[in-house]
Image (cartoon, rainbow, N blue to C red; front, side, top):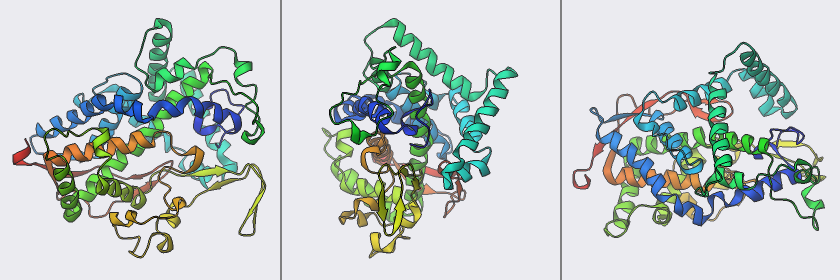
Length: 415
């Protein structure tokens, strides 16, 4: 949305007009109901690794959100790229260390990045300095630079899949590969057009190789920290608010008391309080940012909006607006507020409209499944190292500053 569509390596989030529509139409099926159901055994296996690790942890205390970063990366690679890295059982895993370094580097030039967030006209400065830094590293031979390492692994797997021409599971990577076409002129023929101008035009559901590479990187970076921090906030809330944990556990215990009902993506999405709890976490702790580009001349409350104008949304003002989220004080964590029908624009955790987050269903399913399986096995408690209030860093995402600990006490009748 923010980038110029002429860039060769643009991914979905930085594309607009018909280029965005072409990409989105290819990627939408990635997390359809049918595709998510096929991910059940993969997600369950990743979460079971977390449970196994907690059970075998001598002191039963776990650093959060580090544990959930590893879980999220495990499931992302396994479910969307078809690669089982087993990061949770390999403390020094090179993929995890590289990914952590990438996000640490993303906060360099922080002033320039913040400037580009609040004043999109300066976005080019952040892109310039980032690319300049990467080019210098490349020229002095830093081939092991984390971003280069991760991208090279993507490219290696991509090349193997394309050359082998085998029948792979229809994961995110395979959907992109199936759309590969070398005829770049045909693919991009209508990219410059506005979506409203293509009523009788057929858009080719094809991607160039460079677009596939860009979107593989984009999805991992977009889904990694956002989901892991959302899970961390969930468990922190359960540790400091025992009444919430009890309410949630009672719903889960009642629903799964029948041994024939097992936790999976379908079953966890039938738990109403769990759904409200997750939504309230995402309202209470907004993580990502939403921005939209005006494509048609319009006026909103006397403000003239011209085509090309980028509008960034103030999550906090909306998520904590007492008019939108009352009568209970929005500063209070209260999941039941989601029982009331609200203006759909009042909840912006995943954005809204045609550009709503592509991985929303996957992220929510992972959150719910992890909560259900952990709460069935453990009682969550705070420790002396668990802060009552979280402190945050503002950057590309809004994230907790430091790791913190919570205790997992085994439920004796569930182990």
